[in-house]
Image 1: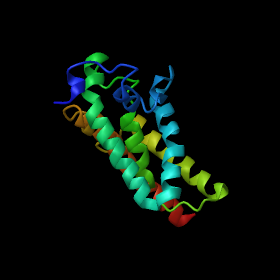
Image 2: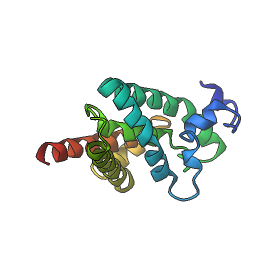
Image 3: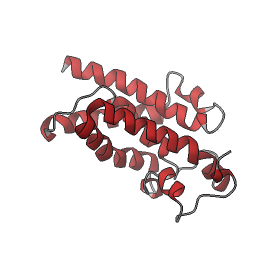
Length: 164
């Protein structure tokens, strides 16, 4: 049991800021998309600083943040509330696993945008078992659909990079 199960997240609480993806989930329209987009500079920075290991560390941190904070958000707001985007931050990192950024924006921005668009397509449309993953018990279900969407985006992004 986490401390969030005892009380709802509060804006003065670090768990609130983790769950809302450093506030990106507070966007009134399309908070999931805003959260995914807000994660990109951090993913890129982690990749530039520590390569694929940095992206893997980013992913693990946001998986933990999502699992830790989700119960309090669900109790305070609803099942998988829109402002909760820690799961998007984790899922958005997955397409970039194994990607080595060059440090050249001309090369790296198209890769970031492609990974973002592919992730959002899979996360929004939820094909290929993603909808089923979402139905897993909370907090795993909240996170699992995003990780699976990220995995499909990773596969397509690697194919795009290989053929383009």
